[in-house]
Length: 490
Image (cartoon, rainbow, N blue to C red; front, side, top):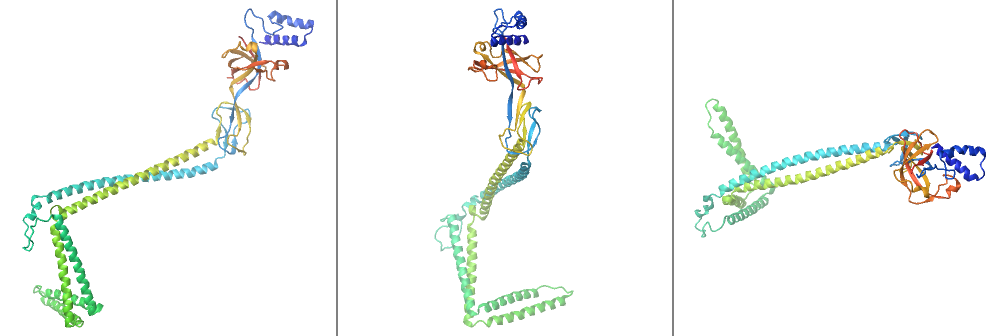
């Protein structure tokens, strides 16, 4: 390799000076010529083989700009320029006090949502138990109704009106009207009897008001109380009393009887003072109408109850009512189930929302710890602790020094001799005794002028093709920015 460099240098010297060479130079070139160098091309002569291609370039590293995803205050920078990194190492920490406070709130909301979810689950379980009980009650009520209905549908009950005896004034046979019609008629009669009773009661109250108003009613009530007490005292006198202590008992009974009798006489006199003969007759008549109207209503109710027979019996109606009540209970239980399920859905949604909020906070907290995505070396640092940094701002630049590249430029007449995946030799001035293997990974499809940082001014006017090679730097010897020489062996 160094021989090749010497050849090229000798050739350049010859071309640029274009004058007779001194004897000393000729003496120096003799060994090169003996080695097979062509003084006009600078490449070793070959026996029909292509000459090696010599090119130069600068070692480059793949660079990653590290930027935060969140804006914030830089809490700490964990690296500096030149620091070696491994993938995943934390390089910058942002302040997280506000996020931690927000997380505490979200955790409290999450705990509350879990409690609500647990409560909603318990409510749903209770509603399901209530629904099971309601279904059992309905089943029992339906069974009882069927049993009562079966008894009511017995043969004798169905044809009871065939043998019913009615007053002679009723000309139609008892079976002429159906049971529902009879019940309706009896209900109408009971309603009319109740209205008449209310009318007679109001009429009596008006007569009493005309006689003496509130004072008369008090006298009347006093007389009623006195009569009741006297009847009790009179019945007490009829009680049998044994011989032992007989007289003491009889004495007490007589005292009570005489007191009741005296009160009765006084109450009667007080009552009579309010009434003239005509008023007495009027009040008796009003009282009689009330009594008769009341009895008529009671008889109407009794008659109505007798019509409730067979499938219209009170027992069947009660069983039907139980079934209806059980059905209502089941509907209520179903409604509670729906309500409890909706409550659980809402609680689950609240838990999911709280979990999402907690995940977001945790993700934001994670983003406050900025890590390096690759292993490499810190090439530049743009922030310090205490500075504000915006999302997307390049805080650090990290280079991957494990996989390096070098780009060289080949003339048009030589680049076609290089193919992808070809291997080449690479050397650097810092380690003159080291030869590194490089692999062609890219060949440009478009010609360009030689970059200004390559070769002489004359060469920069020529069109060349860029060739990029990868260099493995497992030992970390090579560094970005080092000049390197590359030799291709077509």
